[in-house]
Length: 135
Image 1 (tube, helix red, strand yellow):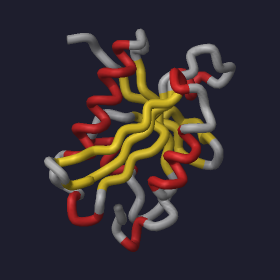
Image 2 (cartoon, helix red, strand yellow):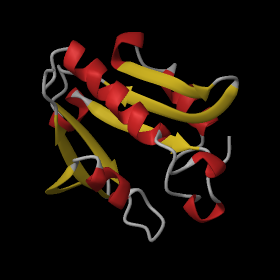
Image 3 (cartoon, one colour):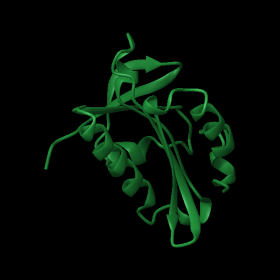
């Protein structure tokens, strides 16, 4: 699965992300491939570590990639909403994420989904949160 060439460097490749996912205990990571029928259209990975001293890691959108030709069709929103539902199921009321400042980065996408910058930086990236509600 390839992202747009101008987006290179804004998110780790899916293979790298899957390798990272299997380094952590299964209850702390939530990697999911996104399919439309038989076609792979995206990937999302969440992290859940409520015992972490780092608040961001309690409920975190770690990676999101949507294939170049599939962007703008609602797959990213679908995936983030599914991760939010999983976070709620686990008892979380907010979902955190971060992004690199980049002309072709995901900032506008995340803002449209209701993420709001916290004013903090996280590993050199903008840290943002999205409130989650039941029902």
